[in-house]
Length: 370
Image 1 (cartoon, one colour):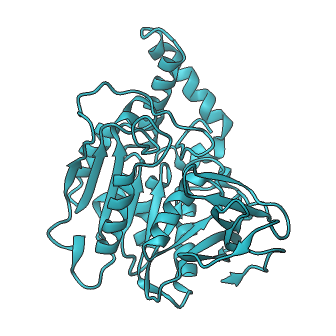
Image 2 (cartoon, rainbow, N blue to C red):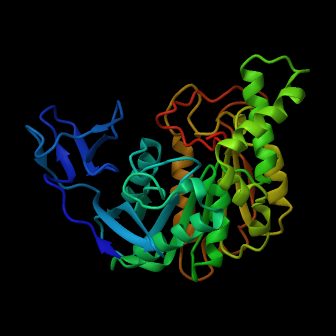
Image 3 (cartoon, helix red, strand yellow):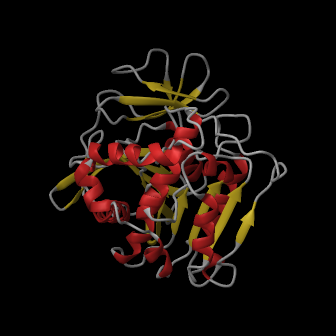
């Protein structure tokens, strides 16, 4: 594991001249990013050097840049390290499809919440994105799982992080990869899948393109005729990727999973990217102790209804679950509590599904049409 050289200027928590407390962190392009988690939240590129009028303050966690390797590929990411004494539980993010970096505010928002609650987080740039080497366009799901395993090893190299209390959080297509990681990492503590389908990738592509064509206004009777052309077009854009991953079915990995697992969906994602009902059905039949939560009034990004903010009840649930799942011994969800199904309701589950109002700038998209 390599420690990245320091940037010009400070990173960490600062108070601006306006009185706002912000996090200045490492950016994926070699610069710095500035994040505000108050109201309104925002993310933007920080200026070079010192920020005029800003002063350093104590924060709930520190940020550290880490470089690490998976074979010949050098990867890079940011560690959110709680300021409280360890040993801390830990989590490694696994990105969704396409190019994806640590700058994505959706990921950072969750990392911030976890770090504020004593959970160290490694948020990397996906291979071939930001400061990470390699090419995601020609990588297999096994390659991505090995990247995640290398990230777990990097997080284990930090003294204040408990090496046997680290797990992975797969987001969107990263949810296909997450259950593969325990095969590569001894003593992995848990697996979380956020909005990642549990069906063959070919089946997800079919549903996604069906929804896309419907949303574009194609008549229902024409969609079955047009869809094969759309599928061929998608696969021709990334032929090597589809050759390596086109027959992938994540359920085989869920069936043999032996660590605590949490899967979270927004039911409205059924109208967009993920076959939620089929995924839940397959996961419940997998025979493993998988905790499944479905929010009827959220979509792919798990936003609170009518907003573009991640729902608070989900964030609280995630923190509690990780602390329980990564506890020592057989406590928490490592015993009889595992394998639950929760249809969480903040509004009636019978309300008509609608497409999640997700901003492309922050949305964790599984788009197989990348």
